[in-house]
Image 1 (spheres, rainbow, N blue to C red):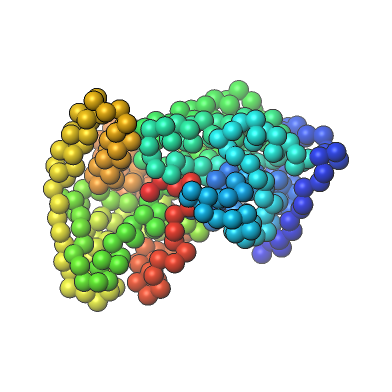
Image 2: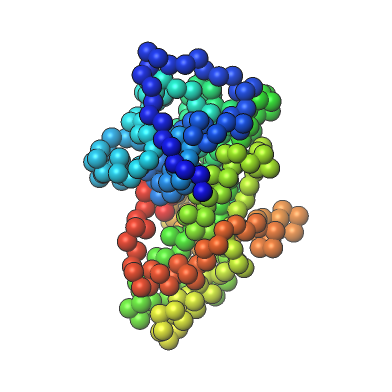
Length: 366
């Protein structure tokens, strides 16, 4: 195991010259590799910070002084979440502030890891975070020497029917173009399937003997969920692995793909309850979306409400697996697997211990 050695930033007056990206950071010891993490207090971002620290990298976590949803965490609580990393207090939505904050660190940046994601998937929030703030992190990172950019994206951008998906794809294209223009710059675009957390919404209902709710027959969609620690480990692999450079990397967890029906059956079995299912016609969502789309034309303020309905409809019907455009189907077999944590093990732990520690972070959609 790599020993953890955290470097404290040197004063700005003693800042070293920024190294050229031509000097590969991959030849350095982990403790000498400076990694800037955006979205570091988000649900996935916090796992990524911990994993990078565990591997001995010098982690600079960009964070607001009051982090969390609506700034619920104090500065001390925020620092506690980032144990072993260096906190850089800034605001990713304000370019000049972010630029000044990084400059004041007095160090060069080797790698940027962006775990930024819209909290809601709303129209304005998606373009602000999934595109603009993420792009700004690329621009600032490049200015201070970053030779590699690891992007946490999402597998669902394969079928971009939603605003946040289009925002993510726009940045992905610009990131790839940046690498094509400069052979000394590289990227890794990570597109995970569903997180364990996103599938745990009905655990307490099943535990209390209530029916498991699903759309249609429960087979409309499937996924190969990956645990947050396993995803963080894969993202950390992208820092040094030459095999993961300049690639779009869809990734799921171990085992076969599971449908909502199979997830429900698993929960009832683990809870020792008689299976009870409530099947909701998907057409109900279609009707609601149609009504909202009509109302938006009269009341533009309902724009986000209409988008939320479309997001719910998307996840109720679309699989989080690799999409094959030639067959027009999702392909579970070609969706890569990584890690050791299983959904069954997660469900069992949550049934026994509850959802403590599984709260959403500040940069997480759903």
